[in-house]
Length: 430
Image 1 (tube, one colour):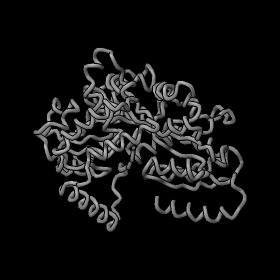
Image 2 (image 1 turned 90 degrees about the vertical axis):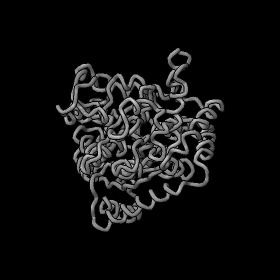
Image 3 (image 1 turned 45 degrees about the vertical axis):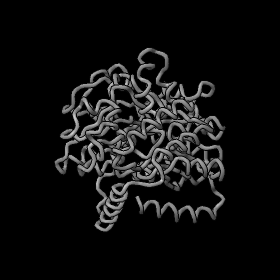
Image 4 (image 1 turned 30 degrees about the horizontal axis):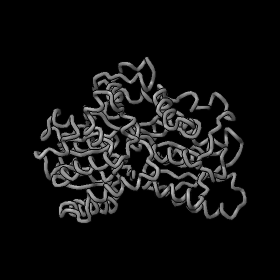
């Protein structure tokens, strides 16, 4: 990937001297979130389909807000970017996205039209009641938030509730994502169980709830949790779980897949569960920003990413789950070692009993108790302020130890050229 990025940077410098911006496609994506070999393949495919030359200039980010600021304030002319769900919503609400028009792409290679998941379409339909997000974005990867737990130290029953992060039995061995949005939702769902069960509130309403009352309740709860937290982590938590230093981690399903596989290789048994109270689902999706210069190539690129074989390769490289609803994608994940689950919501009625890893694809019964996160607009600052108060200015000594160990591990990996498996995507969600 580094070699490709260097070449892309050199190409950008050379091509910037040319006025042929229509031969350049500027893509801005999360780091470690694509199979690098599909980029030159797209260039060849685009030439074959349109007869036009294209050069991909590929750049990466690790924080949603960094990407957003470059477009919103800097008016950067990226042609394709891959924000998270709530940022897509924010960009949609503020007029920063161009509508997608795939009518110029022949039907036989219109992979979006052929492979859009009914579940993904439905979720995106609900993002904005006045503007259909499906007309402005195409989902790329998705997953759930849940609990990674050490099966030798934590029972299934204990891990089946969000309150496991407050369980004194695991004090000093709990890892929580340094991601206020992904922690706030699950905690609020736990605290509002009575209202949910009685029908006084829905999950979707909770995902939009930025009231002072709810923020105060979540803050009070997290301050009770705080003393038992081993670390508030951006990306090192799953590695600490594989080494047995943590036994409970509030994390994402994609990281769980990586952690479970890595831990098994060193004799540590991990599993992942979406707690019974409910949770949030998250999405990252392709969009064309307002200031894009090459809309045609951007449209073709988004479509190319939805080709089943490309979606499968990107899944295998990143460890995350493609939002592609093609049956070829499902077939690539079939594994008879797992019990059958119901994926009819995602792939259609034929997938009501399929054997796949339930960490990758959640059963319909799990999805039925999940909802998508939403943008809070100006109230986002209240969330960040609450999060800052919870964490405080002083990290624990163990947190610093973990950070140092993680940095040492990274340095060693670089020195020895051990890239390992790719399932290390960092997502900073505010």
